Image: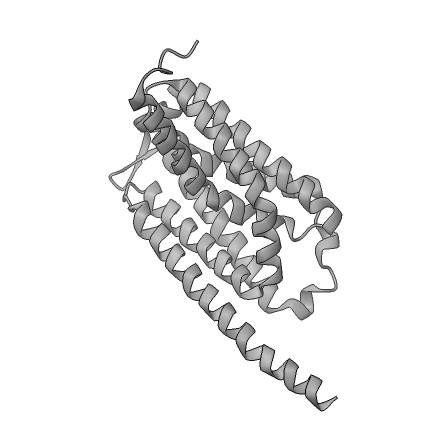
Amino acid sequence: MFPWISSPEAWIALATLTLLEVVLGIDNIIFITILVNKLPEAQRNIARQVGLGLAMLTRLALLFSIAWVMGLTAPWFTVLDQAISGRDLILVGGGLFLLFKATHEIHSSLEGATEDAVGPVKATLGAMLVQIALLDVVFSLDSVITAVGLASHVSIMAIAIVIAVGVMLLAAKSIGAFVDSHPTIKILALSFLLLVGVTLIVEGFDVHVPKGYIYFAMAFSVGVEMLNIRMRKRQVRPVKLHKQIKQ
């Protein structure tokens, strides 16, 4: 059934591809986390799980229609001597949507006093799932095309996608709770979405941006913010002890 099962190279490809899919899925987790926080708390876990399930189904669907996906890289038309393909249109459209959503969410977070009146009650589960499904297509497209370049067996790619989504399902709730309890992390995550949105638009115009630089910048920013959170906790503790002594 799996002719590659006795091949060490195939297992290395599976491990590499799984790790890559998890890394590429971080964008999905951040986006889903930001969106589901608009829902009532009772619906957030369901939306998170369904959203990641849709991400897996989208990637598998694109994978099994691989000829069509790779055909999207062929030029459809030309604008100002720039060849535009179906993939380019999806990347630019997805990037613009990410810029809009991230900017809107940053505004809502910073101007929270005016948003509290309408709050998460206005958000519906169906509307959130539609937005998640649309962005899943954008996030999945590059992921599948990258997978095709790394592995020669469709079954390896499919297994890597399923494992990666399983890992994301386990981590999504913890990541969501952490982001929800730390407003600065939420703003940082939204800034990442702005960065990803700009990257998608640039790549839609055939300007390659090495993903390593982007993920390093994200990891460095998160590392600095983790240090800031620890420093703030240490500054708060003496104040609490001082109040207890006075009492």
